[in-house]
Image (cartoon, rainbow, N blue to C red; front, top):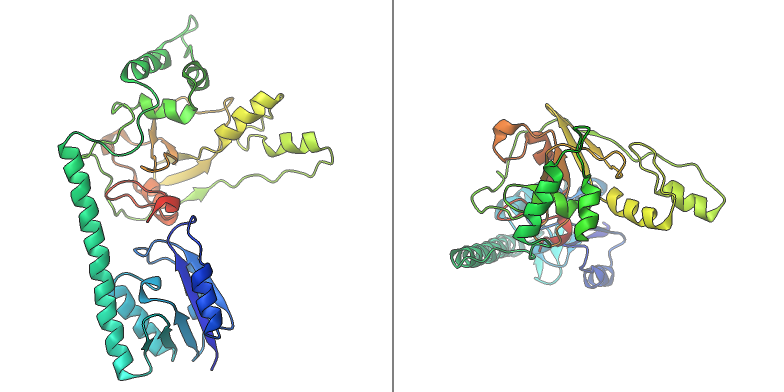
Length: 330
């Protein structure tokens, strides 16, 4: 019977060295590692680990590395028992091959779930208390209320030919901010999420059509290679100067999600091909990053369409009690 190990860290900023050191010291022949919140059931490396094991031992450092839900842990224990896999928890002295080990497993699982619930409850109470005192979480807006009003006026202003007079890139350059910041302040809420306008946590799945980045041919000249790498995947535009290259790098870092009924297409755009239509900005409440969504049906009244919700859930976003990208979940 061989022993294998599984480790999990919650964010990319954490390190799994201590878990892996303990697993190697316990004699694990191979280890799998996931980067995912304890609340998420989808963990590809854990699934790969369980598929690999056949009447072997699975070692983890703590039960909380497997899950933070009694139900999820119980389902995992039943799956392990069905496959003839023994679970060994190194730091908590659990061995499910014995009756005492199975009892301790369920007791500690309940304690882990209670601890996670207490942390979530304390966080919600703190946020509600802060809102009651007029404080809103997140970073301060990069534009003042007056600047946001001017930016919206520039965005709505039409030229002599009847077309939009200022592009979003020109407005961003005027105020010294990014295009995404301008889009955020074009929203009626002025860039701040309204506490009553939260996004529903669940939605029916919808089909996704993801637009991959096109591969670029190898170019021997270093400068040409850099320009080719920054070529816009949507229209093929390549920056001609270093300044344009820096701007295009920032533009292409923004993910655009285009809704068309039940279908969603992921894309990247440069300033030459950026959509000039209403957008919804989904921003992480910690880092401010997130996708821009176009084609949102107006009848949804600020709530995201099911395909957009499905895209966020599939990439590990947490939407309640506040939007958090996978890299900022604790």
